[in-house]
Length: 126
Image: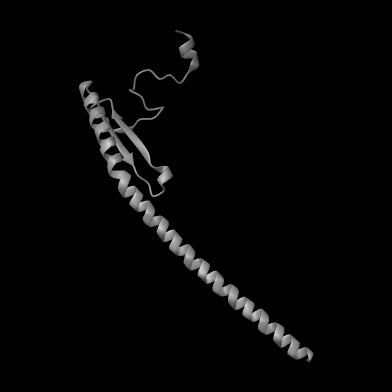
């Protein structure tokens, strides 16, 4: 067998390997796509199962929270803060301590507008 024939044979073999690898990659991409689609579908089905119960629970808590704040002349609200990324979902507590204010997210810094306990020296003076 001549060198040219040997090179042609090796080239054909390499080309067949490359084509086989290309098919394997395409098949893996298709499987990956189906798996991703399945995860999305399962996540939506799962969310459809628990989200209504969560909304009902947060609604019940929110109604009681609002009623308690109404009794002291303030306003309060509890709600679900949804996000595309589930890990960023949150329960927001909004409060309003004065009539002229808007509801604002309750944080460690947002208080009733009374004394702020940011300074340890204030506490040690008691």
